[in-house]
Image 1 (cartoon, helix red, strand yellow):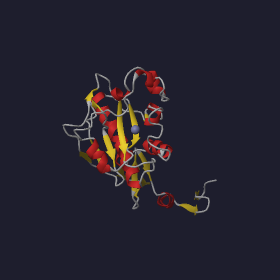
Image 2 (cartoon, rainbow, N blue to C red):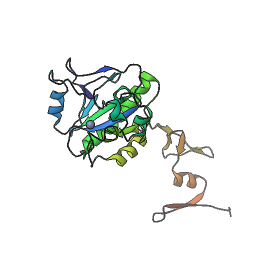
Image 3 (cartoon, protein in one colour):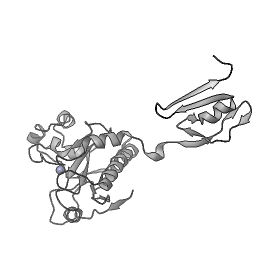
Image 4 (cartoon, helix red, strand yellow):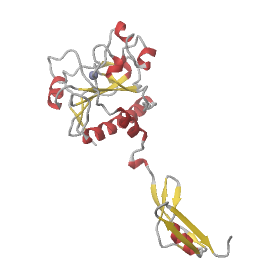
Length: 239
Ligand SMILES: [Zn+2]
């Protein structure tokens, strides 16, 4: 995945005032990616911005650096009291923009294309890793720290990021490790001095060996039941 920088001198942002980002807020843009790009870089926009935008084609655009605050969820002190997200209530009256990273998604009702979903999963992980790198602590991928705009501002933004936003699929995807994080290596298996011809592999510190080859090298009979997915090893002379 690749991040395309789109922010310019007109993109709104300000200091986090010492706050580290601890949550991600998901949004729906309510329009096209082109309109998002032009609005967040327009000299006429003096009211809003977001850190990232994810297009339906799966492109990621960045408008504001992670170590700056974007103007995406700002609330008055009175409005913060109406937030439903526990984190926002706990940290009241701090402006949520100070400690959040915001992602806009191209679209209207929250439904994401497959490419868009894959890109936003990657982006959530990227943001957490960047926050870890810059501030020393990653963003937790739970429903307290990955939230929707409607939980921050239920009065003005009850439909952001939309009724079709795939929350449970997102949380499930955020729990899985990146493919490249899984360490796979070659391993060797020697049975009674004989090296097995079949490849053994090492996955995350565990060696996986071909059972039939090991069994046969030990003089055992190996039966595989494809219905019950059971392998039965019978070693001659053993009871
Ligand atoms: Zn929003």
